[in-house]
Image (cartoon, rainbow, N blue to C red; front, side, top):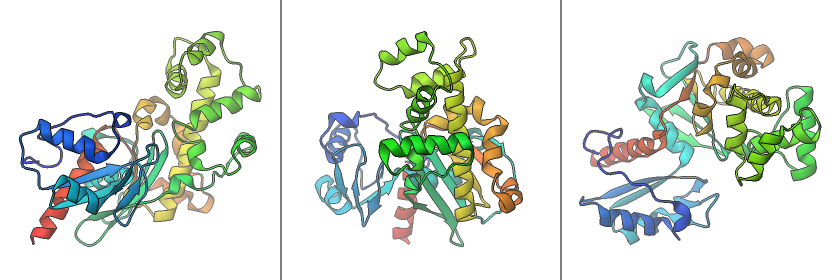
Length: 315
C-alpha cells in the first residue's frame, strides 16, 4: 500500500463459502493483479495460537508457515479478526467514529474493543512505550451475567436450551433471535402477523428483527424490546471489558451491528448499562466510548500490522 494502510492498491471480494481454503482464494486473487507481493497479513474469524487458526464458521485450518510456502511469500501473518480491528484504531479518523461518551482519554491508556457481528468479539490494546500493541481474546464466550429480573429470566430460558450461556448467545447476530424467541414465547409481547410472514421467508431473522425495531412507520413492540435488551446487555458487557483492561484510552464498538443500530445506541440505555458498576461507576463515566463507522477497519488494521512488522524487520 503505497499511500498507507487506508488506501488499498487493489481490492476484491470473494465469498469464502465457495472456496476450500484461504490459499485458493489468495492464489486466484494474485492471478488478477499485476503486482509483486512479498508478504501478507490476514485477519481471520477464529482464535490464532502459534501461527495457526481454525476458522469458526468454516472447515478451514490455516498455518502461517504453510501459507508462506504455498504462496511463495517471504512472510505471512495471521491475526484474529478482532485483533485486526484493534490495530486499526490508532489510525482511525474522527469521521470513522461516532462518539457515545467523550470522557477523558488517557494518552497512554489501554483500549478495549468489543464487536457484535455474527458472533461477539473482544480485544484490547496496550501502550508499549512507542506504539499500541493489540491482543485478541475470547471474551465473547464468557458467561452471561444478568443485571435485572427480565435478564435473569432470559438466562434461565437459555440455560434450558444451551446449558452454558455466553455473552455471544445474547449479544451478537446469533443472539438477537434468542432474545426475540424468549420475549415471544414468554408472552411479553405479541408477534405481529406481518412480521411472522417476513420471518417465515428468511433463514436469517436478525436483519428482519433489527429493521422492524428501527422502522417507525410500523409498530412492533416485540422487536423494539428485543433490540433494547440487546443494547442493555451490550452496554453492560462493554463496561465489564472497560474494567477488566482498565480502558482509560477508550472503548470502541466494532462489528457490523453497532453502526446499523446507532439510533438506539445514542439513547441513554446503552451508557446507563455501561456505567452501572456500583463503586466503579464514576470511573466509567470518564472512559471515552466510540462506535466504529468504517466498515473496512479490520482490513486496514491488518495492513497496519503488516506494514509495521515489515518496517520493524527492516531496522
